[in-house]
Length: 245
Ligand code: UDP
Figure 1 (cartoon, rainbow, N blue to C red):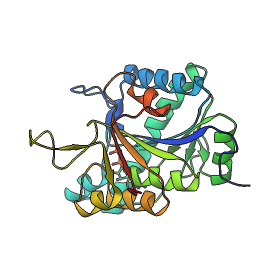
Figure 2: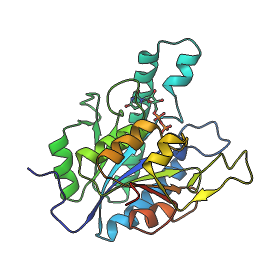
Figure 3: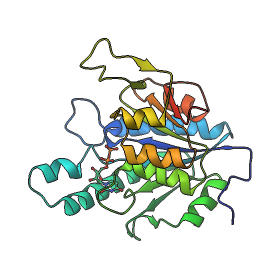
């Protein structure tokens, strides 16, 4: 079976960081209201009939392996904790989507039969082509990676047209816009420049995988209402990262 989308739909991998599901300043790791808003935007985009959608969720609202490791914990163990955290986010998102009538499957890279399907590439492709949203949980299933890299990997495996990274900034800057008021924002930038200049908006493994597999990445601000739906439907927002040709 070919992994390519047989339809004219755009196949998209949306990367949602765990922080996207937390209300700023709240002690709750997941905000049901925010999850509900995300689900509304996904529903709107799926309703357009133009999109096949896989979502990779992060776990940073609960846990980050590197941070726990810096405080003395074994890195691999800490990373497994992080991967399990992503499963909680995936289930919350699935619940909200199903509540709105959006067909949705969670596939976990770590086997967890009672709560999720196990990640099987061919099954995931089938779900996508039959109009179900697939939420990819538990990252790559291996420590020392990130969910950004997972998004690049799943996009490559699914022959996706684009990776959309929904984040807390409105694009790629040449320095941290929170620290430098003169930071310059790019409308378009190459993978090479992102890797060479070590732009922190995604890790270099994720950039490299997308570069090698010719999958552009769009980095956009998820905090602006309507942006997720707009990005999913192909609106030109944020910064596009590509090969530059
Ligand atoms: N993680 C991992 N392997 C993966 C993906 C994630 O070990 O393939 C772990 C890692 O510890 C990471 C945590 O899961 O810190 C949560 O993922 P991430 O930090 O990417 O989440 P986000 O920042 O997007 O919320």
